[in-house]
Length: 205
Ligand SMILES: Cc1cc2nc3c(=O)[nH]c(=O)nc-3n(C[C@H](O)[C@H](O)[C@H](O)COP(=O)(O)O)c2cc1C
Image 1 (tube, rainbow, N blue to C red):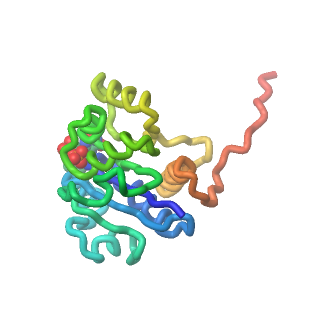
Image 2 (cartoon, rainbow, N blue to C red):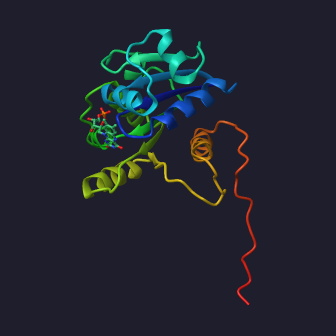
Image 3 (cartoon, rainbow, N blue to C red):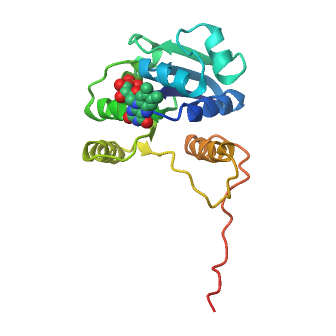
């Protein structure tokens, strides 16, 4: 049974966080999910999904993922005394989805500003799995250097870049496909129907 930390920051793509949380909440392999949403993350969730995720009352999770959850513990981003702020609290992995360039920089430099960054800093110092889903375009040299620095430390940089080899017809197809890739990296089983099974090269003659 896994314990997973999910951080949501103020980059575009909060729908990916919503879908990942729904999968993690449903998974029999996941015992507990620690969730922290940055102040800007709260704003972007409101802008993109029309949901108010400020506060920590049960209403927030119910409105965000559609069901109440006994697995998800929502921490205020300002609570730098939360369990996930300490390496002595055992967790298997942390995913930051989506990750803003500001949070990426804070984590790459160790200049933690809130609980998202502190929890990531702890995951790094404890040598645990950290998955970052950066979102910005175009990327400047600072963004690229920060990603390279973290990748060299073993962080999995997994941008939400859609593939089209599975013939997506809807936005939901893209969200599902990408979320399945995140679950693969967390080692959590799921029923992905769009795995590439190989193809024969097309004859050019
Ligand atoms: C609607 C909206 C979308 C945004 N999208 C992005 C984005 O895709 N990438 C990014 O780096 N910042 C984006 N920002 C700006 C960040 O929210 C801002 O830099 C913020 O300070 C990040 O703080 P955080 O990392 O603590 O969440 C967006 C802001 C808003 C309001």
